[in-house]
Length: 263
Ligand SMILES: Nc1ncnc2c1ncn2[C@@H]1O[C@H](COP(=O)(O)OP(=O)(O)OP(=O)(O)O)[C@@H](O)[C@H]1O
Ligand SMILES: [Mg+2]
Image (cartoon, rainbow, N blue to C red; front, side, top):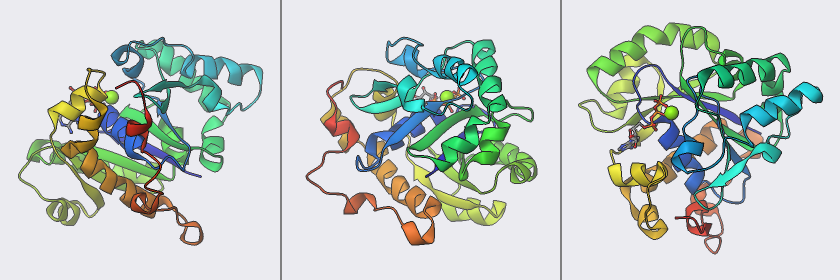
């Protein structure tokens, strides 16, 4: 299936928030996991008041015992009432040790070739990142950036190096800025999958703040994210096995946010 890596090159444009938003509206007909693999340390367990285990540490321990363990689902927790997440501890040292172990066990290639779909939050992508091999193994690297001159300049400077790393790359613009999707795509010669609005209310709920799930589903960020799901499905699906578009999913089935109890 698909291993899709999400990252930024500078700042905190909203990688973690966007990955969680995508998982919240992804059709429930497809099993999907959010893997928090940010070398700078995880946020989700803290944001949702959950334990660091099970998570990437217990997955790495399992991979040490059984070669190439990719039973990621056994090490997931649920947030937002139904989103499976592989959480990381806040400590960069612990996360990087686990990432190196998983790297040594060549778990990334397995993640790419097996179910479920993995949305990997790779954090800020530095030159010597411990997730470099994961990015290489991914079907697609999605870079998040604010459409601001300063951020786009940094991205432009990093693109040649990132092109050598990732098989395929695309951008998502987050928040307000003077540049449109087409301007950014034309100027940087890179596919732009879409743009997500600045929506502090949604971002707050996706960051663990209390909020009504009904309200979240109606908010601008989640609506725009649904369109992005369709773009990602189209972009990553092989021609002969097109995945169903979000709007083709049985409307009787609630989306992940609406299916949950926690919000
Ligand atoms: N679309 C959005 N609208 C408004 N605020 C947002 C949006 N996306 C993220 N934010 C806010 O921006 C801040 C950073 O978001 P987030 O943690 O998702 O970024 P990140 O890129 O993962 O950062 P880091 O690299 O530090 O992990 C948070 O306060 C979050 O609530
Ligand atoms: Mg993050």
